[in-house]
Amino acid sequence: MYAVYTDPVIWANVMAFCLPSGAGADMILSAFGSPQALAVFDARTDQQLAGVMMKVFQEIVYGIAIGYVFKQWLKKEKLQDGELTISDLPQS
Image 1: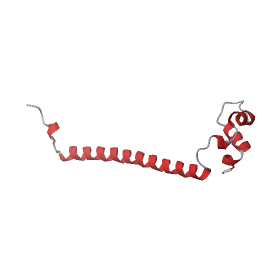
Image 2 (image 1 turned 45 degrees about the horizontal axis):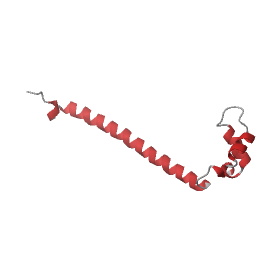
Image 3 (image 1 turned 30 degrees about the vertical axis):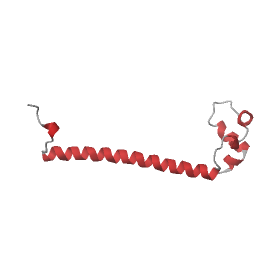
């Protein structure tokens, strides 16, 4: 799995899938040099950071979804109970 991070030829072949057709490994290697040219972190740190970021974004999305469902449920319960709030009273 980590050969993509360390072997320039494998990295260039994988990157060729992300570019338009005709962009071969030779062109990618001449343009970028090696995978280390674009790397800010080592492979392990990169994978760990990606995992943490995905987990944080997942929790944010779940929190928003649960909050929305709870708000809709609360609104439905208030309508069934017949509770009125100040904003529901007619202006006189």
